[in-house]
Image 1 (tube, rainbow, N blue to C red):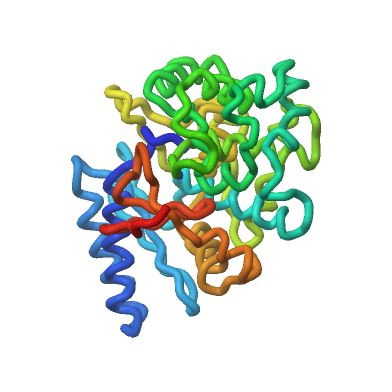
Image 2: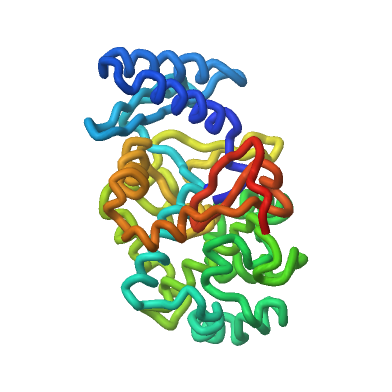
Length: 334
């Protein structure tokens, strides 16, 4: 989960097949399970002209990680790292929910309460002055649950701009948010569920406000504290290949390789995670199965999903708080 042009359909397809295989063979010998999963990724890696793929199944006995395919001339291994894009949002949401539980922030407080000092310092205007009166009553909960209606910066024009300038310019979160403010509003806060990556860059600002009043300190936000159960890395200004071993590719028509550009283009707290699938699987298992990262009440808020009602994902996805589920027939509710 962060730019949509980095999302690759075969990954989602592979994950669905992997989960189905894992459930069917849950009681089977671990070696048989590994072989079955390896067969799935071997097959998936040959689709679409060939891709590098890695996947992990996690249960109480531990992880099983498999890999197949190539990126260029490089064969994928179980130790490689990948760009996880919007999957970063789950980790950011967890940090927000934990800060709420610890009394460090209020989910029902307005976004302005937290980000105005940062906006004034960096842009000489408040959040509402930048985004307009529609933002006046927007809360932190609206952001984390994708119910803010805030315009999405992640549009083809801006994606192309970032790709073509990334070698010479490291985009800051404030610049990304300023571009988002130029896009049309979708709805008033609370009136729709609309997937906008701007929400999660803004949540990065909310987290930053708890430790600094200067938006230039965004590179000092320690995202590692979001992941006590695993070890992803997070990109700020460094080239992605400081941690990344398998390149990503854009859908810009040119197949631009995403590997050594300065990392501001990955959208900070909405999309800058680099990890092995084992790291992410262990974290998700701890969060959703062991339920050892958040208390039950807070986790219930994260997993209370609502159908996306407009834009990308409408009719097939439901969103909670940093988590979504894919449904063939989404729940019909408001």
